[in-house]
Image 1 (cartoon, helix red, strand yellow):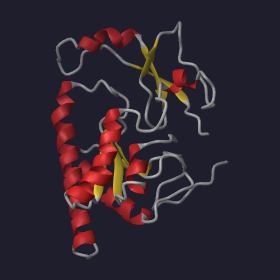
Image 2 (cartoon, one colour; image 1 turned 120 degrees about the vertical axis):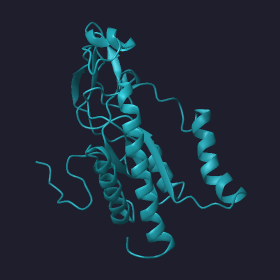
Image 3 (tube, rainbow over the protein chains, first blue to last red; image 1 turned 135 degrees about the horizontal axis):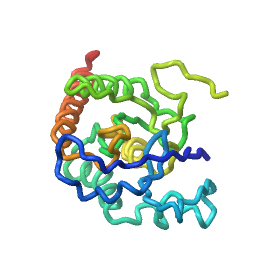
Image 4 (spheres, rainbow over the protein chains, first blue to last red; image 1 turned 60 degrees about the vertical axis):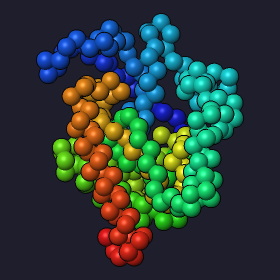
Length: 169
Length: 68
């Protein structure tokens, strides 16, 4: 099981761009623990109670470390209805074949393609998917200059379709 | 970061949606989740350009059958 490397990001309460005092200004003394590689877990913890470093999903402390994940897949009504809409309502009732699915998240400035659960598995048409993603990343960078990287959703250090795969040492 | 149960995995494998992506917005850590108000419109402009580019690629490749 891959482990996230804990890094710390300190949110500065300093004013920038002459903005009015942000309501989040009091967060300036707190440290947000997160990963330096991939989606940060925005778990605000005080120095007295840091988030436990638990990597075993079977451990009872695992939920405290990564956040409560529920008890079964599609337990949340929103995800159950969304999956039903995509797999049943759209193709059968509206006769629509869905060709793209965009899942917008904060933050990292990247476009991620399947699969997230394992770095050794790639979609059958990974090259097509990655090619489309590279074009989209370029289009995004053209607007304001922000670089958007393209990566597998597993976000391993050595895995980008189209680039040399570095063997981890 | 490896995790199971991601929506992008499900959309591709179970939903049968070929072009499934998880798109991460601004920024890279300076503000993180607490993005300033001034980033809202630029972020939206980037995402609009990205979505249009994706749609164009898919249209040319899948519907017209050409090489984008």
